[in-house]
Structures are given as C-alpha cells and as structure tokens.
Length: 109
Image 1 (cartoon, one colour):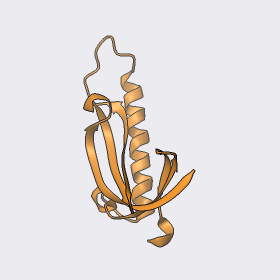
Image 2 (tube, helix red, strand yellow; image 1 turned 90 degrees about the vertical axis):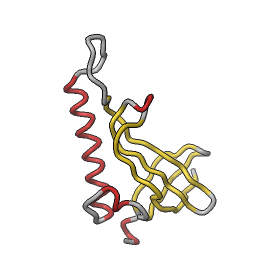
Image 3 (cartoon, one colour; image 1 turned 90 degrees about the horizontal axis):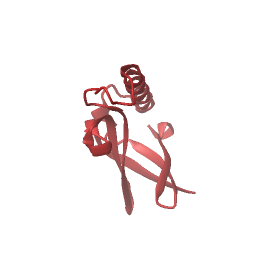
Image 4 (cartoon, one colour; image 1 turned 135 degrees about the vertical axis):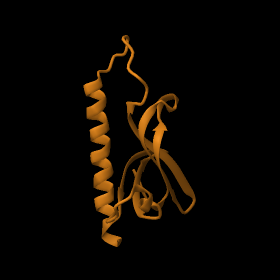
C-alpha cells in the first residue's frame, strides 16, 4: 500500500458509471506526478423496465447512500456545495495502481 497526498482537481454530478446511465458523483484527484478519476455511481438514471433486476426502492436507497457520502465530504471539507470541494487536500491510498480509499485531509483545513 502506498499513500499519496493530492487535491481534488474536479468534481462532477450527474450521469456516469456503466454506459453513462447511472446517477452519482465523480472526482478527479491529482498530486505530484499522479492523477486518477473515480466515480460513485450506484443508481440507474434510466426508467425501470419490466425485466429490470433492481427495484425502485433499491434505487432510492442507493441514491440516499450516495447523498449521505456527499454530506460527509461536504462536512469534512467545511463547505456547502460540491463544487467547493475542488482544490481541497486529499489522502489517497493505492494498492499498486488501484485506488483503495481516499479521504479529505480535515487536519490541514
């Protein structure tokens, strides 16, 4: 495991994930000599069809979980809008090239 320090370079909210058909939030992190994009897209943004394996209740729960994470990031950064997360310092933990976790560095804000 390797820890890298960086900043949030970009924040997007809307469609992304699998075939850009899921709703959620995406981040681009960058540091000295590295950068990575991630997304938190858990719920389908498409209309539910009769053959769909997920229920509307499951979609509501997934969107609720996503927004609770957004609330935590806003609170950690001391901001009220997701676009204010841009430029905030982060700690990213990698296993090889795979991002395992990240957090806002609250102790330096």
